Length: 423
Image (cartoon, rainbow, N blue to C red):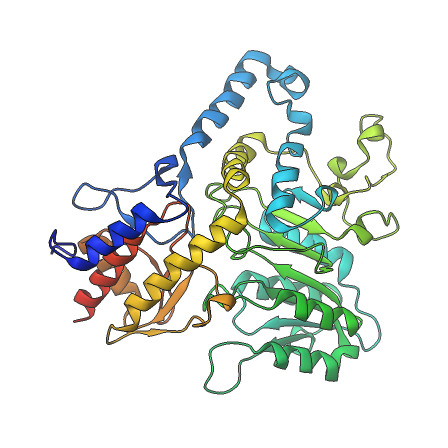
């Protein structure tokens, strides 16, 4: 089935938009999967796993060569010495999320980092025990907060408060979240929401909710798995207490890539905060004294447990260099153009419902579609049209035109394929 005939005026317009866009595509810097016809696929699953930067293999190979050439001496004498390798990721990651460099550390995986943060910042006492999350939180977040409640001897059914949209609506309203905090905030110990909801693609009002949560006396943390590398963030200025994100979605760091963590400056210098400690969180000035007493370094590094996994960090470094070169403001602007174009094309297709906010200010680059047999539709998109998307049970297809490598031609191709398959 040919979804892009050469005489299609829509295809010609999409190509014109690609040729004239203020930010030319960086697609050539990534490995793109093949379509069934032998060409490149239209890849819309970067909100699940980003494409591999072509520079990643070189960086990984350089570390393998240093390992072969230097063995243990690579810790101090490699081309990028391993003992401080995580420092290479610090400043580009801080620019990505709007933080001061000492507020950011690359470590572990997302849910491990959330647990480490909650070990410090979830301190239930008296009536203040509750944890606020969104009802449609990613399952791992639900598991994490529930297990934290159990760890403190509390009943998750009473401790974890799940915020739901109004009847008949898909999204949480900011005023409803703020109102809940104003009414019941004296019982809330922790607010932990997704910056961009994984299912609907809704971008939450992070600064407003953070302000309301902190005014209520709660700690406010954010899961930025679908926000980091997708939308501009200003975590320091917004006064967020902590945040964590993965690096394998929009950040293109590879499957299971090393995650990131933010801890606000007002906390990182507080050595009295309880934390789960490990060797690499100790002050580097005394780390190799091998003393039994923990001396936390005055940065987010003090939550770091172990020495950095070099081979896993190298692809993240390759991707962060691209984000640093292009900048989130330019990427966000292109994202709005691409996603707006795709949203306009989807609006005319019968048989699907876009459940992502229509206002570009309150969405990233993901568009979620409610449609019958979502999993089957995703398989047919890939097999028959070379369009790679993903499905979330029971009835949602997610399309994410990531601006680093997706094009207007990809969006046109996806819309044409959806229209044909749904017919």
